[in-house]
Figure 1 (tube, one colour):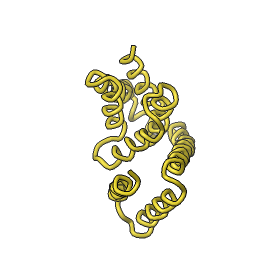
Figure 2 (figure 1 turned 180 degrees about the vertical axis):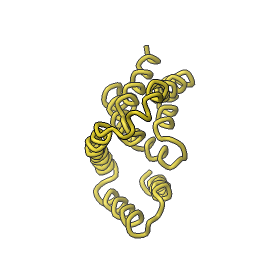
Figure 3 (figure 1 turned 90 degrees about the vertical axis):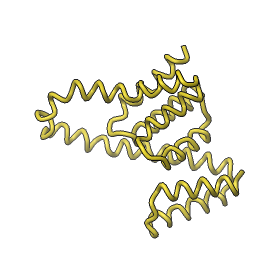
Figure 4 (figure 1 turned 45 degrees about the vertical axis):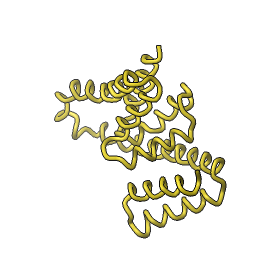
Length: 176
């Protein structure tokens, strides 16, 4: 039953997560943390931060790690298959219609409608992470990390992977 739950937990978000990794993350969080309770919000945030610091698509990294934590190697394999299957199925089915729909005003409108929804989902996830960090690290540590990260990203134009890596080192050295 656990392998079926893992499959379902990763298959559904990858079907509904139109647009790639960012829309899938809040949906995965809802399944992994809220629905099945395989991780806490803090653990999910740590896995997400580490996954963002590594190359390759975020959804497959999350699937492999979480699947492995829940059910070992079979869990990782099932989670990866469930993550890749929706895209593979959609590509096979929709590839024939690509030229027909690419200039469609309905497709353009759908893309425009989905963008604000993804922004709200990501903002909600960021607020949950901020609240979790505030509760576990305190207001000053959270404020310092947030401010320094913002300045590093926006003013100094440091690559996000470097900022995430430095925040992980700071957390390991100062907050543990």
